Length: 328
Image 1: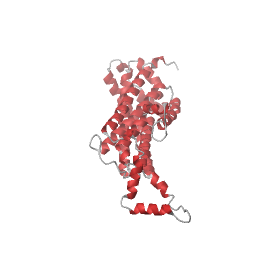
Image 2: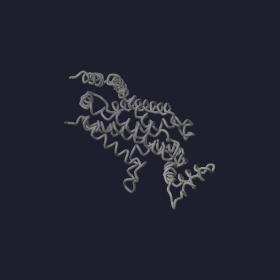
Image 3: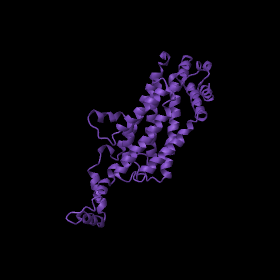
Image 4: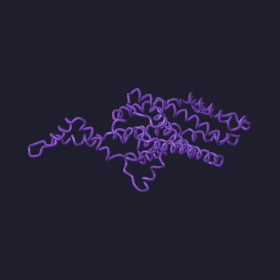
């Protein structure tokens, strides 16, 4: 047995003689202590610098237009949702399946599955909170312009923090549920890319979906994280610049030796507020009611994400209650 395996066994083992005499709350504390020891000895703290690197890359690519233009807000909100889902998936995709034999043995010795899952929920919530703070710190460090005006709490930063945390935590709990279903880390890592692709394709942000495919978006974490961020970013109130930029490419087109579009663009740009007015007019025809900057929109998204968290946790408990029947 390798040194790392010994550490894992030491961190995972709980005194079986005490489990029989402890209630659910006490057992939760025991397992929570074990998880925080694993945070140190198994280097779970690495999720924080990883979150910082990913957030930095996203800011570098889309940070210039995030919360400034309609397209930039949609693209940036999609990217931030990807950050949350990626962080959440990697936090917990292997945490249960890698110690399944230990869970079976300790369950037979008196361990309550609810205590075990609750300890994981608290621990994963701490990881997600840390990742949220790291992400927001990187945003501030790279001078991302946050939206003007809070919709819920009075603080834009706090509103964004709650959205990022709930999106990350919902993805984390989904990953924890998958980890409780599968029997090996290999299977978990095989399933994860398919889950990630499903979340991104059915986020409802970039791909034109209709019919049954559109209804599937309601069952993704990505959709509600993306919707909340677009609503908080005042998506429907921002200018749309892509149409203007594409038209500007026709500036030098010649017709009968003349450049009529050049003169039109020159007149528009010389008119005070002319270009901005056209951009806002273009945006009017591309507004989405689901992204309205209303408190009700954000609260609905938060409630959906919270609902996912509870459902995934309950399914994790239900799955592990039958761990004794696992013969593989």
